[in-house]
Length: 253
Image (tube, rainbow, N blue to C red; front, side, top):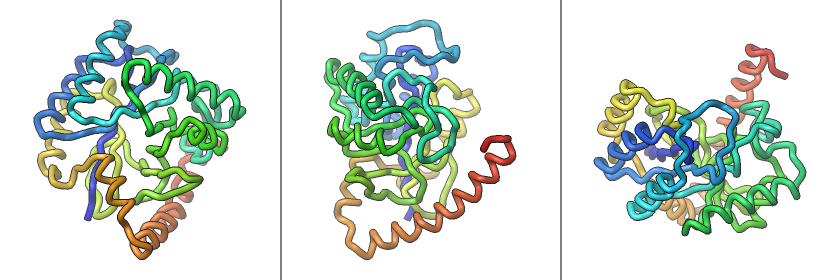
């Protein structure tokens, strides 16, 4: 059976709060508990909502906490100084390709900001899907348990971390798998909101939360995990072929 997780990225003081609130109203109405990827100290170069408001951000996150939504750390300052990392979805990112000590310091600083405001994230989301072995080493050092990323239909363990794959960036139906729908609030239009709500209404019983996914994974037996691993391996073959085709099409090597 298919299960859907909803994740919102780029939650920060620079986001468009009106669009975030529109999504918040939908999730509250249907009792959805999304993952919020919070940028602790947003210094992105791209133009966002100029109304920076830290107090407003923490107020929204405290509301989310009361609703039992999941607060995850989405990098540190969301720069693009690194490479595409292991997944190579992009050719830039905040962490991939950078020295271990530098990555560790960024992760540590970001976590400290969130902890100061009363949040204790143990889920990490790398900006632009850019992470590598140094990132994973730093995450373990800082006691993160889960990475919301990776290619596959089902969660998997790697380097003593639980990966919950992310393979789509808009709401669409799948015949099976634990599917994380990665959304960016600033990019939503009224039409997009209506489309998302329609998807939620149709699939409400299939929409879950990260706590339920982790609990179920921990209770799986060896046969189920073998099925997960086999399915993920087949997906990865298709993923690499599609990625190679995409990179060739857009001139990347």
